[in-house]
Amino acid sequence: MIQGPSNWQWAGAFNHNDGVSLVCMLKNTLRFPFPFPRITSLQRPSFSRTSMAFSKPQPESNSKVLIFGAGNFGSCLASHLGDAQHDVYMWAREEYIVKHFNLYHRNPSYLTDHVFPSTITAVGPALPDKAFINEVDVLLFAIPTQFLRSTLRTLRPSLDLDNLPLLIFVNKGIEVGTNALTLEIIADTCGPEIAKVATFISGPSFAKEIVERQPTSVSVASFSEEEANKAANLFHQPHFRCYTGVDPIGIELSGALKNVYAIASGMSDGLGYLNNTRAMIITRGLSEMTCVGTAYGASPLTFLGLAGVGDLFLTCSSSNSRNYTVGYRLGQGEKLDVIMSTLGSVAEGVPTTKGVKKIIEELGINAPIANAVYDVLFNEKDTRLAVRELMELPPSRELELPPTAGGPSRRLLKKLGLDTEQLMEIMHPRF
Image (cartoon, rainbow, N blue to C red; front, side):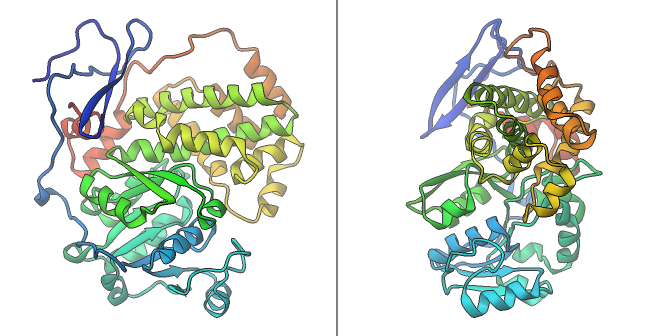
């Protein structure tokens, strides 16, 4: 059975094809924030079905899907699911988008060159009524994090726990003011029963490449492995591969944090720095992300996956990233208010940086790149000065995890009705 660690200070494991592989066991190199057990037998976390409100059974084909959000990512996912012959309804808050889309099967504001499948119908600007909500198999939320709370609060009376659609969230950010992750927003507005079965999709996935059927892989995570599998089966196609997991907190933090470092990478390129500098930002950014995430209570392994280093590498390396573009234009000398007013779409990394700054301060984490991005965005620090100050920091240990972990996660899990032992069983499974 499970034995406590001996003199190993850090160990991690993951399950691959029902086998067990040790990812790494490093002595006297990394300090892991809580005891990680030695593995001597296979054991999976499980929960009683009576403790969670599971979604309705999904049809084998032709699911009825309602997508909230007609921006870049909502539109590309609508196209992906429509191509798979699902019946897709895409809600937009702008009436002209609804009318134009239904007339021409094109989105006049996003992915404008793409002709969408005839299996997609645009709806809005009013939210669909309760009867419609109860008929759909899937609700997918692709709206900015800052608008999610009001949408869910309006939608909650239409949700029936005995006839609950599969709930999927693809937004990436931290709510300004509350510093809440999407999980907490769901718990506050819809209740813990619904939050516990919410599913999150994240990973390196530019909208334009998805509609072009470029090979793409994403992470799909939920506290309920059953719900994660439902979402993965819905999206999985020969050109779109899904990997499931049970660390939604880590997936959320990865998706939010990487946008901050994409801004930093864009700044570097805008200043004229080259490949060495970008590689440094990506690598040190991953280190900061992992440290912040682990202190929050996520599994450090999550940051080594598609939603972590995968999405970080993509958004830090391409002008197709809105957050990278914000950073690049800052590095070129433009003012933030001008950039935001002319960007044409939402760069969630800008408001997210405020939330990240407060989380870093609460956790007592050393994250100099994230702090520098905050100073450039909101304290009008010169970008070249920010870079110079970062490079002039004294030498430090390269790899180090925080000495304590899990405070914010424990508070969140308590709100969801899951205790600390269940948290560790789900997010740090003992196989």
